[in-house]
Every structure is written in C-alpha cells, then in structure tokens.
Length: 154
Image 1 (cartoon, rainbow, N blue to C red):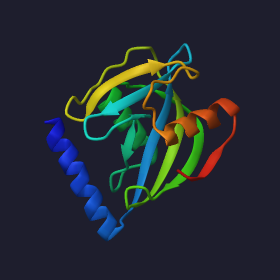
Image 2: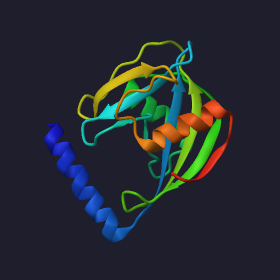
Image 3: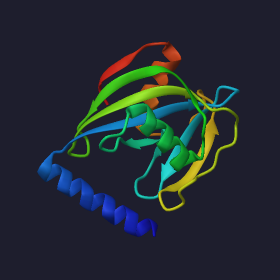
Image 4: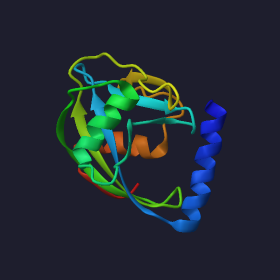
C-alpha cells in the first residue's frame, strides 16, 4: 500500500507542475506537556515532518489543523497558542501557502491514526531531532526556539 501512495503522490506532483493550483495548508508545531515536538513520517514521502495537510474547501484553517492532528497523530483537544508564521511553498509545483501553528497536546499520548498515510510518529526533544527531519521542519523549529515569527518562503 505504501508503494501505491508513493506512486499517487508522484502523479499528483506532476499534475501540480502543469496546473499550478493555489492551495492552503496547515502544520502544527505540536508540543507535549514536557516540551517535546511531534513529528510524522508519511508512507508516501521521505523525511520527518510536523503533522498537517491541506485545508479543504469551506473549512476554517484552525478546524483543518485539529482535523489533521486527529488524522495523523490521534491528538484531540490540542490548545492553539499562536501562529508561528505563514509561508509560501512552491516546491511541489503548487502555489501553496502554509500556516504553521504552535499548539499544545493535552497529554503525551501519540500514535499514527491513519496507517495508510502515516508510517511513524514520535515525540522528540527540540535539540535532538531525528535524522531525516526535513529542512523546512528544521527551520520552523529553529524559528520557534528563537522566539521569532516566521514568514516568507517555506
């Protein structure tokens, strides 16, 4: 099934390069009660990412964040602290704007909720992130640790 997701992901990126759709996405810099960050490895792409995804048509961005946290890491009831930043991402061929929220999980339970989409999840210390953490994820975490508000390119 992971191979099918990878192939579908590649096909989608080809279509996006041709059509260049404008999309909105959300990511959660989700913190555990003891200050660790939740990261996700998907089945269809390499690397560790903050949980998140696309905002559906007619959906509020904060509702999308809570939906994605439930779908990817089975966290419900997270408290949103603030917006870390709004970023422009053109790496997949889309004209994508990504809103990154800082949020707090109600407890430290965490597991991959959608096993077709999520290969692994974990809590990681902010200064001990796993090998394969994506460059954009590293930049967002560095901005958070520095106490800055981000923006610009993903």
